[in-house]
View (tube, rainbow, N blue to C red):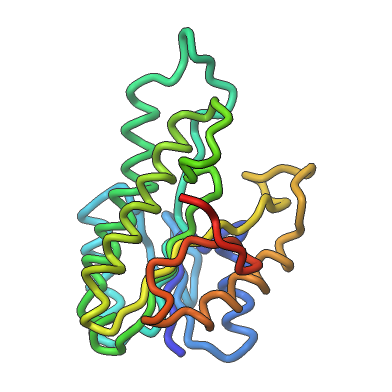
Length: 215
């Protein structure tokens, strides 16, 4: 299977890259800086970088695109005086616009393979779970869910399935050492979700264990 994973230089993205390569997939990762063999340079906030990545990837059919690159910039911000406009702009550029433009740039490759798109979002994007705080991250991940479900509707006729996934609260640099699960548990679960994804389940919003997340 030919796979491309954005944001594959560290954390869950890197673990997904390594796991896919270990099981024999033809996997390409992206990173903002040159990471050597198997990687393409990509800044998902830069449309020119996205176009250049797609050109470098070429015309090969793409079985699975994993949109993993993202940011969480509003930790520690306070409602009274925090959450500056720059954080909103940078977060949506990475977590939403970057996802859309990456899908758009690789759409010919996905159509050629009747491939799949996996968007790594978060349970924090669920509007049914709104405990307050982290306004920017929550809003951007909710937008990513909405984007994924609308892409699922439009791409179903092309045979392209779209799934939106919460990787769990994972012990990574972003998740911290107090997180619930280790990286291997998350990655094993996510790969199972990607393998199970099909047109019949397109638009699903679930966690790494396959549990549906309320919108």
